[in-house]
Length: 370
Image (cartoon, rainbow, N blue to C red):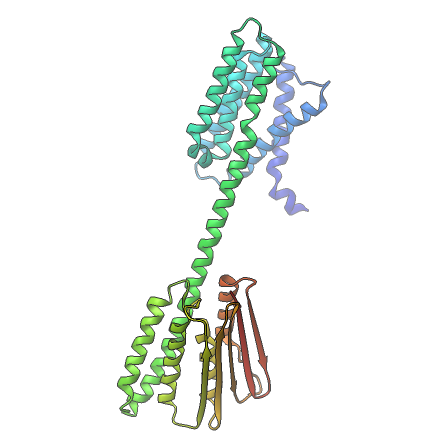
């Protein structure tokens, strides 16, 4: 409770300032508080309290405090001048008072929403300029009545909700853009986490072959080059052909088959719809895990069974491999968490990732709905 009061003490100070100034000006007969209309009094006082509180609360976050204080002082001067002119001359529907009210409203709009006001300043000033011209035209008429008065007041109030909804729309658009840019930045970061991991594993494979002076080393270099090209140039796209992703996985499997001379069974079956597309570099994470935690650690009878199918409704990928389960096994690692995060960003509410970890068999199923 104490922290809450301390955080928003600016609004308490604003209430004291507004009340003191209001009572002092009424004491000087500069303004009149409509005691017979309590609702109007509450609205006016509440308005000034919110504006003053907002200004004091945000003042500590602003760099150019002096400029803001000058603007607040100018608005206060306009407000007091409006009240004073209305009370002193006591002229019904005083054109000077109406003009000052418009100036005050536009100044308040500029103070609270400066960027929005600058963007639509020409339109806002033009609308209120036409309303004032219409008011002065009616006011010069000798038959000016209360009917005209209410018509002008309605015209003065009419743009306010429109401006408010335009501002809400601008905020919504800004929020959507910000969210989209944040999502894109996160995806880019996650992709960079995938690429170094793959490169590290592939270079390890190549290193083993060159140490043993294997004649297969040149073929590994070519396949690695092709995979890096795909990772760099296709990996930056939002979607790639599913057939290209399959070829990428085949190259990865081929690299490991060249390296491993032990008894390894790798089955990769696929049946897809032509021209199907998918987000790049999703399945490679699961394939890397199967090799890293299964095939590379098992000495005999290691296997990996991979399936990739698609139809008009979904894309289905599954991979099953055996592994040796140590006392403390954490087969998921950073790769699975990376994949989960990417799926949430790219396919929200359109994917299902099922991980089934048994004592010696690990299976992952990923379904992406189109």
